[in-house]
Each structure stands twice: as structure tokens, then as C-alpha cells.
Amino acid sequence: MRPMSKSTSPLPNGRLRPGGGGPRGLQLRVLLLVMLILALSWGLLLRWGPALPFPAPTFNVKEAGAKGDGITDDTRVFLRVMRQAAATGRDTTVIVPPGTYLLALDEPLPLRSGVTLRGLGRPVLKFRAVSGARYGFEAVSIQGRRIRIDGVVIDGGARLTRGIGVHSGSSDVAIVGSTIQDLNQPEDPRHPLSTTVVAGIMIYGDTVDIKILGCTLTEIAAREAAPVARGIMTWGEPGRTIARRVNISGNLISYISPREDADGIYFDQPPGSSPLSDSVISNNIIHHAAKRGIKISAPGVVVKNNRIVNPYSGNNRYLTTPRDALPQDMYAAISVYAGDVTVSGNIIGGSGSYYAAIEADVGAADGIVIENNVIESGVSPPFPDSSGIRLDQIGGFRITGNAINGAETPIRLSDNARRALASGAGTLTDNIAK
Image (cartoon, rainbow, N blue to C red):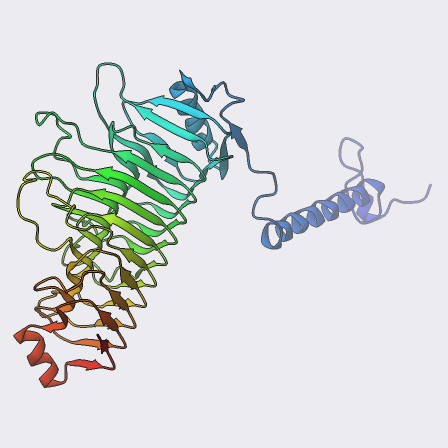
């Protein structure tokens, strides 16, 4: 009998020990090699392949039982689907087919991380008060990351004070091609929401990378003793930084009222420790914003290439004192109350008059640039005490390349602004006034 090799010596129970020459050892090495190849392939797929190796889950509210007939209450279906989508822990899409969906909520419709709410054929989400309640607070609550609303109509039915809230901690949020309309305060002054700011979209503090693109915001009104309404607002929430890297572009904003305090777009004054907002407001069309088109109280915002129309002609009356004599038709197209703000390439016009088409009152702050804007007023002769550009308290500024027509004073400088100009902290060049 031939002696066994050392690599295949018998074990005490008579079996062969795996080694270099037996068939069992060869099988083990082949198996390990296959497993290694599979592991490497999977790693390469994760590194250079698609972000998700499997299709993202999709939910359809009609397939889940919603009717969308404008009669049936679809609240439970929407809440169930939105919670199911969030519970996947993955990027998911909730499809809303054409129709009118009645929603009666005692809490906002929740959108959480990774969820896209996508409308097909511009479906209408018609919100109404729950049984026994006259008003609600917010239609849709966004909180999380990678959240998108695309192609839906959010109709508050004059029974909500907020359309969409982008809440603290949210990032990478896009609201695209959607409509937010018909928001108001309750008439009863005893109601807890009677003094709430009415806003189409409210962006809270500690948020970043928020996009509002190609949307329509309209019929947003306040009606109580101290009425405040905003089309889009970033709130300077106490204890939190102002929203950062907000992009508000290509939107249509209209019928924001009343005259007392209604602005199309408003960046609130942040807490003192906040960084620059680093935000852009561009290529929007704003009309029938009863007090201002745009108000900036946060530093680090660029306002460029917007079209702001003042269509009033002695008919933009106060809500609480409608018989009071009217000053100019609108207070301003653009008001700047913070430093490091650029106002560039905007077109401001319409039949009505302004106290100041563009005004800046920023205290000792500097970094104010007002350039290449076109300001046209249809009032003839010019309204008394009206200004094209008005500078009040201000540190450093650059006013250049603006064309101004129809204001009593094309560029009005305070004593403070004149001192800045004389010291070289301010520059005033190449402006055209008619």
C-alpha cells in the first residue's frame, strides 16, 4: 500500500484533512474564490452603479382607495399612504392622479425624508375644516431631507392660514410647478389662529437648500386687527439660524393682502448670530402684493431679474380703516433692511405710485448694491414725495446703472447716505433719471 501524503493524513475518525491535494480542498478554494468575486462585483456596483440597486417604491393614492371626485373625503387614504411611504426608509414617490381630493385634517399632511408628492394633470388637494372646527393651521408639513412636491394644487378653501411649512432641520427640499391658493385667517378674533401670519409657504429656521421653482401663489390674505400676509416667508425663528441657500425662482405671486402688511416675498430678520443667508430671489413675477413685492431683512440675499407690477390706482385701501386718505399706492417694490444684499436687473412698473420703488434702511451695515434696475411709474405728474431709489440709514453702498422714470425724486439720499458718499463708502454712478 502506498503511504498517504502529509497533506491528506487521516484524522482520528478516518476522514481526510482538507489540504492541498484532495478534492474537498479544491472545492473549498473554488467556493472561496466565487464568493470573493461576488463581493467585489457587489462593491463595484455600489460604488459606480445606480444609487439604488432596486427600483424605488411608488404609491398611487387612487390605487390605495382615494376617489378624487370632489365629494368623497379622501383624508384617511392620504394619511395612510404618506405614512407608508415614509416608513419605507427609502426614496419613494406618491402619485396623485388628476382629480379633486377633499382633505379634512386636524393636523398637516406629513411629508418626510425621501418622499416625493407628484401630481399628474395638476390634481387639486382641497382642504377643509374637520368636523366641529372652523379653521386649520397648515396644509402640508415638510420635515426631513430629499423631499419634493411637484405639480399639485394646494387649495386652503379660505380655511387654512398656511399652505406649506418647511420645518426646522429640513434640507434638500424642492417645491416645483405647484399652486398654493386661498388662505385666510378666521374672522372670530377669539380664535387662536386669528392673529397668525398667513403664508403660502413658510420656511422655518435651521433649514438649508430649499428650492421654490415655477410655482403660483395667490389669494393669500389676512383680515384681523393687525393683519399680516406673505406669499413666501423665511422666518427668523428665535434660537435658530435663518434659512440658508434658498432659491426662489420663476414663480408667479399675486393677490397678497391687505395693504397694512402684505408682502410677496419676505426674508425675516434673523437672530444676531446667524450666518449670511446666501439665498437668491430671481425671475419671479409679482403683482397685487398690497404693501411690497419683496422685503429683505436677512443679510446675504441676491434679488435679481424680477418683474414687480404695481397695478393700483387709488384703490389699494386699508382693511381696518378703509376711509383713511391714501398715501402712495404701494409702499415699495423692494425694501432692504439688512447688509450684504444685491438688487440687480429688476423691472419695476405699473400704473401705481410708490413711496420708494427701491428703499434701503440698514443702519450701519454695508454691502448694499443696487444696479441695473429699471423703474417706471405710470403716474403723471409724479406722486408727491415719491422716490425711485431711497437711501436712509446706511453704511457702504453702490448705486449704478439704474434707469428711473416717473418718481418725484429719482434718487433720494438721507444725510447719512450723503456722508457715506462723501467719505467714499458710497458710490453713485451712471444712473439715468427722466
